[in-house]
Image 1 (cartoon, helix red, strand yellow):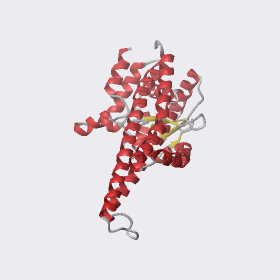
Image 2: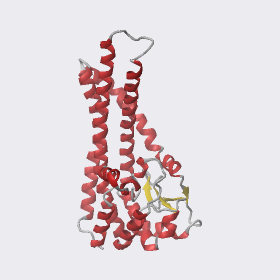
Image 3: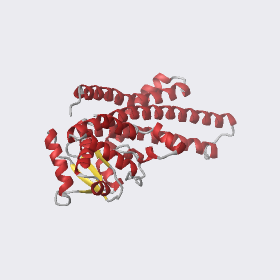
Image 4: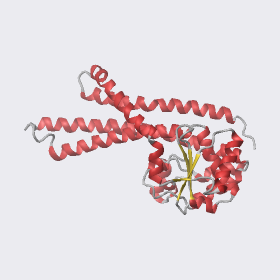
Length: 315
């Protein structure tokens, strides 16, 4: 099947994603400046003084998280490498699809989970990986499995995995900063500042609380903007991966059928890492019902699965 303007859409999406991605450090620095502007009488000079330290700290933090992501993800989901002799069927499907689109063969990992799910990860040709559950291999036919793997390979081809990991790292940094500020605020309320050098002045204690409240508000604003930016990146790219996967396997109805089966019994739900769950082809939390399900869908990194199936079945 043909997708008119697919390459143009991918190029436009990649350009938009790069612009959004550049917004992460801008948001972080903006939050720092806002905090200083409210709390410091000379915000500009103070900001210039702390700027190098902020950049170095974030840079080191980012580098460690960025380059250790492969081992971190494998450990979190308890995945094991899969060789051709372990499961020739899935290995051959991956190999045939990569040959069809002219991309290097990624690693294949498997998770012992009777439910269904899959995801792609990695930042370069040495670390790109497609991970599947045992339930996915047992309950999908060859065409459906090819559609799912084609979806994940499209994420790799479009550099989605690298982009998502980068955004996850930045959101994680701001999440930790916000958590530290909340902890400091809580300690301030409990102990009123440093017990060894505490003043009896109520104004000083009140000032500390006000400063910490401002810090929490700044961090929360930064975190909200980074979350919204990440959602904008991820949702668009899921639709693109569906289209690319359907084109690669040559059977959009097979991918639609696979998504329906996965959404009825999504796996990897026990992995207590929402940042990793954002990579799954179907996010388990987005399928819950009630008020919680409504907010999960509202803030989910994935578009509605029913809508994805509807679009695939149109072709």
